[in-house]
Image (cartoon, rainbow, N blue to C red; front, side):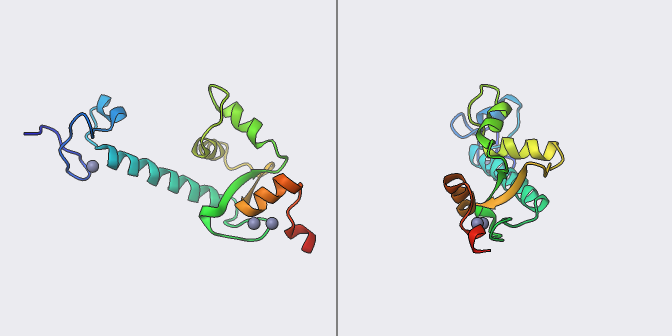
Length: 133
Ligand SMILES: [Zn+2]
Ligand SMILES: [Zn+2]
Ligand SMILES: [Zn+2]
């Protein structure tokens, strides 16, 4: 009989389904629930970021969270992200978002753009939406 159970879903824990990072801390949580918890955390962080930066694309006012991301106004995103990473590699967005939160959501060089506008800005230098104005 299993000795340990996931505190969330109640599944019996064994070495295959016990979230490895949690096992060390003696936290009774299975891999699936641990992943879900992390995912919830990321979604929550991202919605905080989006709300803090006005809730919509500054270019086309698209407000679908899945399409929105923080853009470095001066185009130094990749470089900046590397400075946040210990091994100078690319960092996941949530590391970048946590940094923004810690810094109090700085607005000087950051804005909210949707994927379309972000992509267009990087390819053309300016989003076509701006020509229409
Ligand atoms: Zn579970
Ligand atoms: Zn847009
Ligand atoms: Zn645009």
